[in-house]
Length: 275
Image (cartoon, rainbow, N blue to C red; front, side, top):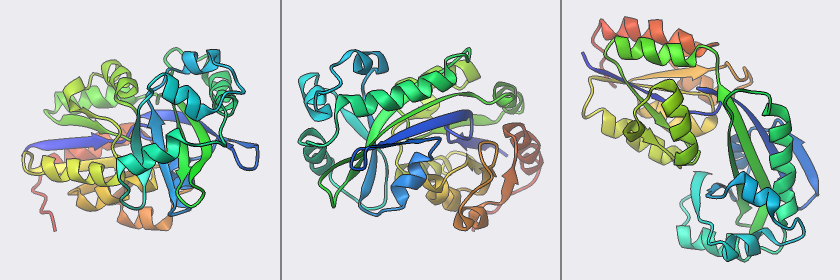
């Protein structure tokens, strides 16, 4: 029986650290879960900016972030949202914002880098949380991470069993490809800027090609994919504080990514019927 395993990245394959800057209140929130922060308000949309952290740090801190993005033609992707919003509408809100400064994003970047700079492999991604009700940027955000110990070995073990591995994440593709190269996952099996609905569609599409599709994730943005997968595995390696709805949707709960291997080994030997 052919098996495919789809991994989320941050919190699942990567030990992540995230910082958000509340632009309205002028407060910095360290160690926050940005997807959960986004899902707390239906008006919020988490976006990933196609911007280099070094370039942002070099820019004038008192410049509007929207001006910086427009002047440099910086694009964005949608990472997490709770309602369908046209890309054009989000672009209008982002590029016309007059709240967030470049300095707000610089605060996030410096906080994450200060925590992770001693790691041998660090990947970072920056973005913002738009608020449709406010009509602008509510938070600037930066996430950084390194592979969990045992992640590379777990992927190698799955490949040795003939299991195909994929990454589906709301992070930028460039960041994910660095992680995929390190872990040994083919780049053409990496899906970046994947919203919850896109993750679910990826799982649905893979079910046409594989006998069993397993989804491994750690956050509420993986819930739709959990419900589409034949087998869902919730990782608590990053944190064991999970919404009950997510726990209820999981077939297995693990504390380490290496625990995915025996689960997949077991289901590879039996027929799984998708209900």
